[in-house]
Length: 377
Figure (cartoon, rainbow, N blue to C red):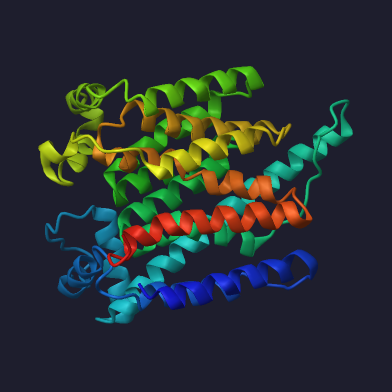
């Protein structure tokens, strides 16, 4: 992927982020969504797996009743057939439309989450419990920039099926976070989770995320500090070098997770699956940022439900460090980092805001560029 184009795009993101914070610009998010869709659509075929999805799209037909076994989930094949009915054999439009679907899902899901967050702050301000930070408006460019800084670029450039599955899980979470849920909300949650599994079988992890959202609560600072310290000890000392294989065999023995274990096994074979590797800078970054998010002292229960999901991702990362493909699992939990970063940044002002915002974006951008651009070591 062209580094110059990416640099220009993110410079534009920072510029529009500045304008959005100080001026009212209606529908400004389209100034982000359209250029990003174009950037992804016309990416180089050297980006990993791009040629695989391009060749699949060219081979796929538009018959909605007949499906060949291409090794892709039925939901993704159905979406591909629908898109092919519209754009014929134009694979750039295919990539652009998939990216558009992801961005629209993410945008609306987090907009719902932000609204719930603001409603909770309004209740806190009217009660005896005074929030330590003020609730603010919705900054669409900042949100979308935080999303694409790592996960958005990675999902839409390389793992298209996983990207859609992730977006559907986030949408389900936006309903699970409602305080007073109606029966229809639970139906919506279930439907979006089932739909996500139809796009990628690993999305079955979304059910675990929903359970965390529904039943977890805010704990004390001491509890979180001790937990993060234990996570660090397990990861940096690599105390569970054999645990990865044991856990994977347990997962494989459970019928409900057979598809998940088979999917992970397909990525590189059994021997490479359990090969040990060095310390992940990505883990170090997210572990360090957990303290930043924790010290924010946010009074919102919603914030800590998402933070608990985030911590589960870090814990699994530490416990299964010996599994090379552990990030196929942990990304489902760490994905919510961009939502937490947004809620954190939306309450910052001046130099602090720009220092954290630019730093968070650029660090994650380095991570993803090393994946999508093979020329970067």
